[in-house]
Image (tube, rainbow, N blue to C red; front, top):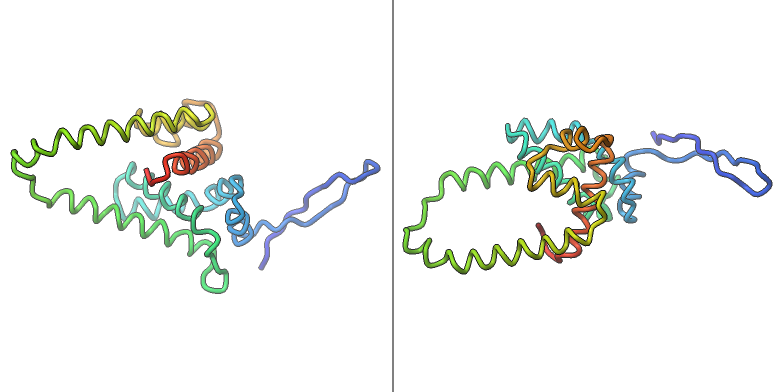
Length: 199
C-alpha cells in the first residue's frame, strides 16, 4: 500500500493547493535514483537503526558495524537505479547491501588474522614504495577534503581521523543525528567523485 502525506503548495493569487506526496520506501528509492541527496538521508533515517542492528549482530564490533552501514548506503546510492519493486521490497533490498558488506568485513578480518607475516626482507623491500604510495593517497584525500563545504568536511574528518561515532559527532557538533548522517553521505559521495576511486 502506498504511503502518502499531504503537502501544501502555494499557487498564484495567494491560495494554497493541497497535494498528496508519496512517502513510500519505493518512492524514496526512486528519488535516490534521480540523485536526490535528501531522499538518501530520509532513507537512512528510516532504515539506519535496523541496518546498524543487523551489521552489529554479524560483526560484533561497533566501529565495523558503522563502516558496514556507511558503505552499504553508499552502494544503495550508486545502485538505486537498478532497484525493481517487483523483485523485492525496498527494505529487503537495502538490508541486502548491509548484510553483504558486513559479511565482507567479517571475511576481511578473518583473513587479516590468519595471513602469515611476510619475511623481514620482503617487508623492508616493499616498505619504501608502499610508504610513497600511501603518502600520495593521503595527500590526494586531503586535497579532496579541502574542496568539501565545511559542514561536510568537519564530521568526516572527526569520524575518520578522530575516531568519533556518528552519535558522538551529533552531540559534539550540536546537530541532529540525521543531519550528521546526511552530510557525511553527501560528503563521502563527493569525495569518491573527486578521487575517482573508492576510499
